Amino acid sequence: MSTLAINKRANYDYEILENYEAGLVLTGQEVKAVRAGQISLKGSYVVFHGGDHPQAFLINAHIGHYKPAGPLADYNPTRSRRLLLKKKELNHLFGRTTNEGLTVIPLKLYTKGSLLKLEIALGRGKKKYDKRQAIRKREWDKKRRTLTKQTY
View 1 (cartoon, one colour):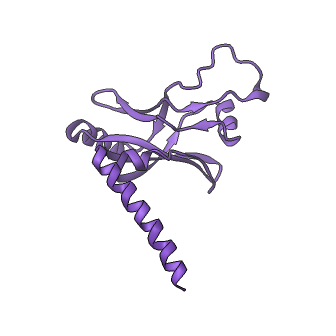
View 2 (tube, rainbow, N blue to C red):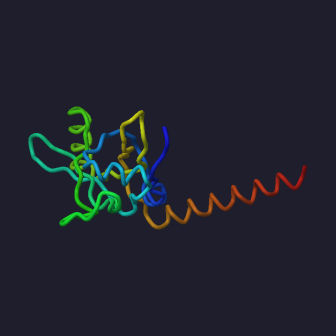
View 3 (cartoon, rainbow, N blue to C red):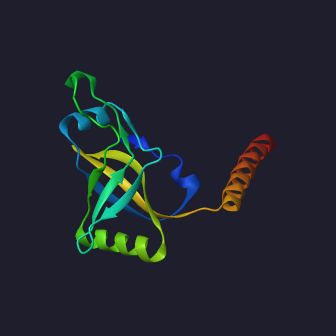
């Protein structure tokens, strides 16, 4: 299992509550581009469409053009891509996002066998003071590690 892309801002901007694994509907040249490392999850998020039978879509994930595929006339690198989840998971995520005001964000894209999987998470946005507190804790942990190394 190799990781192809990571959304580094997700843990800084959101408090992660639950993680899920989802498949991703891609075209052939998009799969090759992703395996070549031409993907960015920065600024991407998940939305739901459809009332009774919701479907999840990954929005604003940038998958670059795969050069060996040749020129494509109307390729949009940030198009919305459908996520493949079980019905129970879809309904659970849809309910939590609509009722509790939570957000579904992509964390990382990785391979599982020959398949591409996207790890998504249900998260709550952090306030500015929460972010400052996280930075303060991270700096203190770093300082403490350096102090303990110097004492030995």
